[in-house]
Length: 431
Ligand code: HSE
Image 1 (cartoon, rainbow, N blue to C red):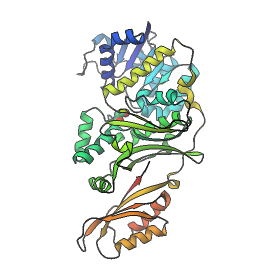
Image 2: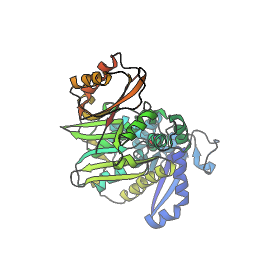
Image 3: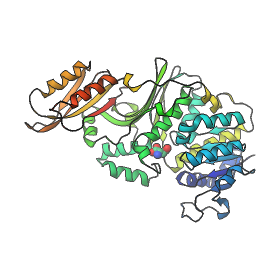
Image 4: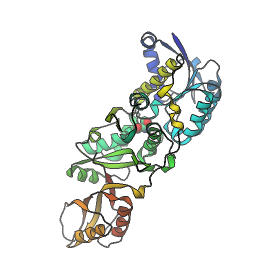
């Protein structure tokens, strides 16, 4: 029986989920997997705080450094989030010879090079299944199940909060605020939910996915990142009429020696498999050169799915400690060269454009003319309401166009006196 001694940092939503599963399934882990998970200490901010789980007082400490330095701890499980304190503790844990399991996507996206290098130099395991896709074993699938493949593209829904909000707005007509509050209540959102809404959380996860899927490092700051806060109910309704749903996608594609890397609200055909991923569910659609398309789907957020992923890492570490085989299991795949990220201005995409225009003859022609002068071809167009002289929405879908041209055309159209207020641009992926 392998005895794995754990030092846990943090007893928030995920920490409480992990603690609960470790209690509930203690006998199961011993019997079925041959591992005894032995919690030595749990570092918390306050010992007296009211919690959803009952934990013996003796297990709690407010001294996180004492946990990472404890000679009786084999693995440090970092669940406090954020980058500053978490980085200090993870680095110290590695210096002290502990294996590390973390759910912290911000930490790995922003400081991954430093942390992975230290783990590599020290010959320690650093696992992070819970950092991407909640309970979906996506890192394991990339490292092992898809090991024979060169990964060519990833299209993913990896922020449960945004997906929950867009789903409620689409299917039930909720407003944005109402859906966000509910996502927070369900424990999907980050402590600071702006990270969910503005796409940062998904960009952090995409940086980690790219590192392991494409076998190279990208600068996190090179990833284009746009969240869902400017999506209006009317865009959802218009998209629906054209046969599309709006999803927040994190996309990475190999493209002419570089990678495209972007997080963006996207129109997807309703028949697209990702258009049907609802609520807090996440999905990662991977295209490999041998396997073709492979979809990884499951609960992307919430205490128990995330704790399930943490436990899969702990089981791996327990197994790896008794075997000398590293092979494709090695997270050090991440230490290959740097990948160049394609600039957004050079990408090619289809676009959904929404203008508010004065309803009078010649307006449509004027806008089409500007688009045409920037080599943008229109594939579909609709102006719903009609009331002479008033301001009405005009929606156009384009064929493949260069982002640079769309940007310049929108600037030119914005200067026309027939256009009122802010226009909307959303990229379309056909899949
Ligand atoms: N806030 C994250 C989400 C939690 O909504 O997906 C999982 O990382």
